[in-house]
Image (cartoon, rainbow, N blue to C red; front, side, top):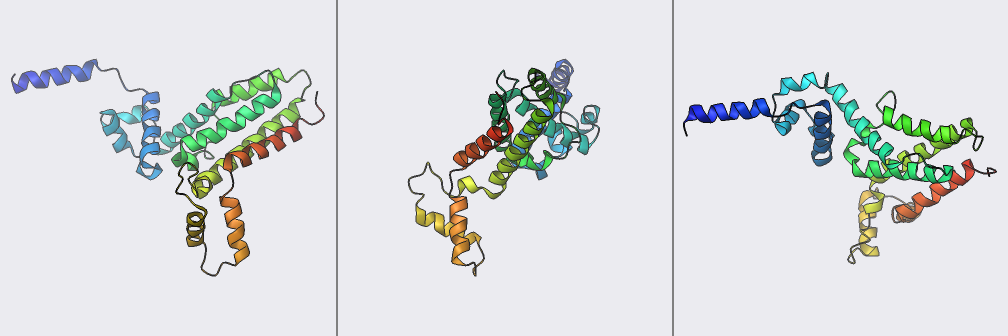
Length: 232
């Protein structure tokens, strides 16, 4: 086959390929962040990922800030998808908290972006609005319901971000029989100042060696029970 024929075939393939959408760009951006980290995200790399010219991406995202906001929205949309409105208010609050925590753990490199968007994405607002509408019969009152949702989201987001940033849950690999208490002690001691007093080391062991899942469940349960106390 001649080079002219090959070139024509390649050109035809490019013309017949479906155009890249904004959704394609954002999905590729999130995948890149998950794989390589936020600092590695660039329009040039995205162009290579999607096999398009870098300049063509500006038809889908206005600039780097728009791209980052879009990535954050994808993560929040994931929360919305995993916490649809439910008939039982406490059940939804718990699913909402778990959805936030799961999204942070699924996309740890995107954590710095989660608080940067000015308004939560529409899908998430629709989920919250739908849940508030289900509670509009007086249990709980809308003001209490909003406070409960905010309290749960703040707890879940803060806890998950702490788990990711400090890697508390990974100090000991509970799935690895070789992860002994002595190995745990060594890792924590190395991370602390040499002159740290024993009580600080003991506290670090208690905090970093705790069962993160159990701690989250206990904290979430306290918030939900507190927010719904006295409601039938």
